Length: 441
Image (cartoon, rainbow, N blue to C red; front, side, top):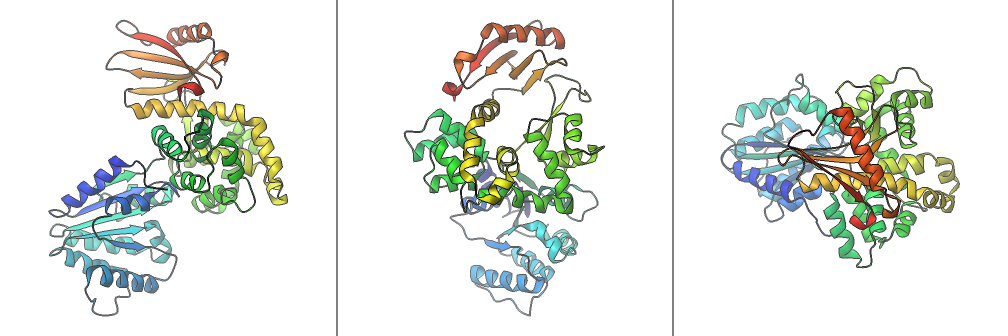
């Protein structure tokens, strides 16, 4: 699959490279596994050579031998000495860049913790000594949110505050997914587009796999993901076990509960059969960035009327249909699992459709606040409220797969309940109601 989107991120990386010819630059690139961080760097610098160091799980000596070969190949120089420590290689590059501009990309940067944790302190020392005179364009990227956050957001860590730019690579937005699908299939339907969004979450690698396999319809996508030999069957586990560590069982139970519709803290704790899970929920939200607290729009920050949601669409799908039916996966009963997915598709994709329109509204860049709303009694719920504070307009949306199942009078009544409960959007504001369905995608 060709390279799509990422214009803003590409622009930042190219601009930073220009800055580095006068002042050393240190860019951090983060994002979940398979999101396309490495491809972004390759695309941004496709017309200019750069050094690429991949931090494999090997000894420091073995890594440095491969780094040395990369330097000699790309820069056409010979490094004197054995250069068996990363600090020596990094120091040499910082010195070299004082006379010759260098772009260095270090992939899976967080894995230096496994190789030699002292590397971060050593890098800090060399960076602080030479960066004022260096023409170094340093880019480091990593996939584990908890470790990357710790390395660059913890004041106790040596590299805290050293970065000059920070890029978080996000999933593809709706417009890019739509372009990708239509480039591969002129017969694609809105339900096919919704499936691509709901099943992959816009993760570049997952989208590319489906397109490369010719899975352009909802049915083909589900079959490709849930079949013998599919990488998707273990992808959820592989992507999160390393992040969570030895306590992954509790985190998996929490995510399974949320994926199954138990979204309040009490419901989650009852489902898991544990007492206080506040610490686990906070780490899932703050450290791992896998879940988020979803509160009614305009509610107070500490309001108790909140629900938890899994941020990543693929993880939501995986916990709802793969982890839940792991016994069937072990038996190879993939046809049975696909039947269950088809049976539950309208409900599952209905929630995904709400996420799709929230993402579409956010991508439009026309709104200052987007959210949903529900009252404490659960009698009134609004799928999407989009606010434009500049134009003083608020739009209330009911979202359903079938437009025939939307009642505008009911939506208007819920809008009234919202306005009475919140006291929002008074004098000078305009409000309107919209029905959104598959036909509006």
